[in-house]
Length: 292
Image (tube, rainbow, N blue to C red; front, side):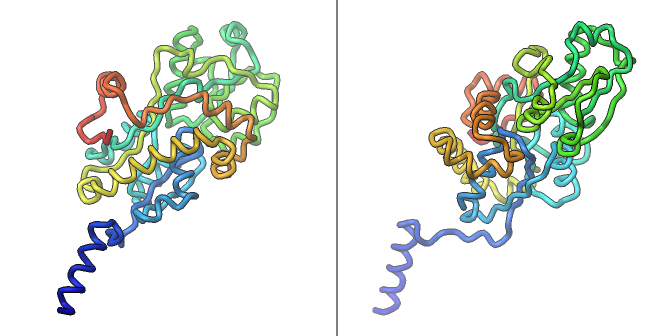
């Protein structure tokens, strides 16, 4: 009789959801400061990731995030298509699993000169993360405005280090992204182009992992997708509360800057057929494992 009672008690716990699956081995996500990755930081601080035993490693740049994943210190990485294809050379089975956002002005090129002035300038100083989507954006800007690369002096540096750059009268280009752009604009630099008006490039952010890791953790990643969806809804619904939670991960931007940053991306976590077609045709992504 006692055995039957214990059995029924366990079954009640199981079917009511109180008998939760335990994940002994943690999964780690590496992610850099970017408004499109705010839901991951939000979910971390709210404790939503604890139930899945998912950890987050915050870093300062796209390149650092990719390098952290490449060295095996993280199981999943947030990135754009540029970092994805860079990693694919080393990890042929890396795949996108959760689409996050598309940049709609959040990636930009700042300068102290107008485009017309830059077209006539020599020895233009360009500061950017060279081995990242920054270079793709700069390439499109230079090509579209017929500015020769021969006139560019490239400085490879991450966004955090760039914050110490002071205003100069020398022709300068800074390729950056939200939230780092605000500090440069306060110095006197202004926007000459962004993903909102460079029609020849699409920048998509997603969460990537390997097929092997996904296969072992498919149900956990599906639950992560629901947590990300929930986090996006909550941070958009109560912006004041979400700002307090994620600001430390976004270079401690002001509330006003946070609100503006949210307008520079479009959430695509619930992708339409049009978005799926775009990432398949334009970016060449494998779409079979993207969780919708």
